[in-house]
Image 1 (cartoon, one colour):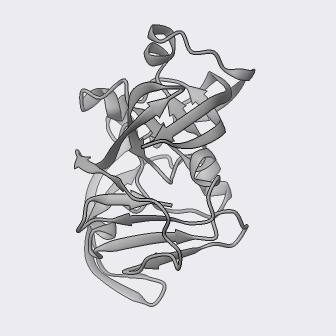
Image 2: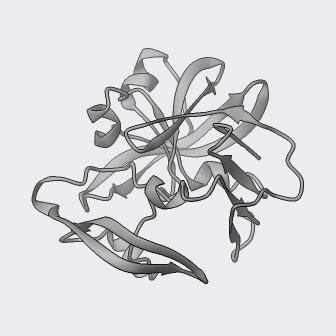
Amino acid sequence: MQGATGEVSGNNFLGRTTIDNCQLGTMQLGSLTVSVLDAFPQFLKSNGITGILGLDVLKQYDKVSFIDLDKKDGLVLFGGLPASVTTSFKMTTSGGLFFTDGMIVGIPALFVFDTGARFTTISSDFIKENKINLKNKSTRNSSGIDGVTKKVEAGLIEEISFDGKKIKDIEVSIADVSALTALGQGHATLLGMSFFNKFKSVYFHFEKSEWGF
């Protein structure tokens, strides 16, 4: 779901094409217009992943839920909600991405969802301007949809919160995301799987413009 990290342009972008009669599990998706890349991110390829679902697919349904995120084999539920929903937060869309408002260690922040990203990513400018300290600092290699790999700072952010609901010790990378910069949202924090794996289930309700866990 979504590929906000990196940029689908330049030498890695071969163009667009239409695939007829797409099928996802037992669901017929019909005809899809897709971006074609010369080099797909190695981490995704090594895990048998050949494509990334965008909003054009997800919004064919009024709601999408990710069930059993805390297990190796989870479930994607199209058109339904988890059995128990305890929270709901407002979200907006822009440039094919979902955004929501929250806080990072008590500092107001804008977030974008990207379940296709392994780690949550915070911009280096946001970290510097707000003098935020990471726990367990290290470095790691990071690559986006553009296939470019670079070494970035990593660690644990003490707290992210939404309407008072606090999530502790999220593993993050410190880097600038070109897709967000292009939208004029370079300060936005990208919520990846290191955030979503904190929950059993997460849902997105497009008709109501809300999400929750």
